[in-house]
Length: 278
Image (cartoon, rainbow, N blue to C red; front, side):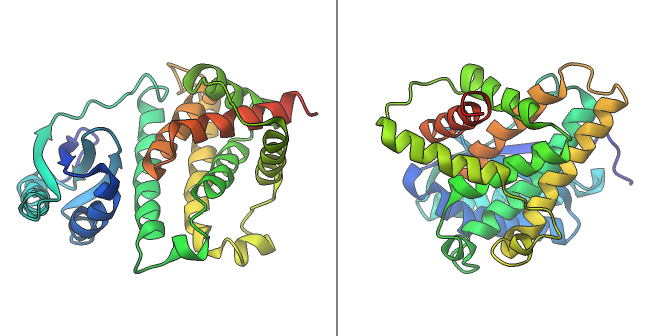
């Protein structure tokens, strides 16, 4: 049977025994199962969310592959528990946040980005691949480049980008930044460089220092262009494009494992750079 647009997403939640090793154990046990399910055609998409219970969501390719995909993921989760890496796992119902992502069209784009981002994050973090070591494990800096690429591809101008950062800083990640003034200015200078550097596919940077993240950046650029397209066609019916981009950014930060304070600092610094340092 052919998959339809209404094919149900499935979800398992995992209670890891030690939050500090959850990322590593996900790479060892669950990511191989998800990749195997995707490569064998059992599922067509998957992504994850970091919560107290980590949430792993996957989309069976057809109704006939529901049982096989569930069995594969359940077996991997059982292995986690057997190895004392997790205390339990549960099947859950996934409820997509359609309103937050602008409606059905925005949710389709978000799911595509969630999938690509999840795959690239685990490739980046996998110690056997080594991209995190090559990049100096600078998750924060890489994330800023990805977010800026998303905004530019969505054709957001300088101050529209500032509005996105401001909505995150003021509404989604509000916090007082206690850093000393000198350190804060240094951090803002770094953020300015990262949100203004040209990372287009034709640039030397993209072909050299960022070559490991080429496809990752492409996924964010593709999402930005798609959001611009559905916005122009009047298909973002629940929220505006900047609100939707902001929501995609905080979900990306969750997947990448950036602490709340780091998220707030990035957004506040970018907001200051655009509106207060112009």
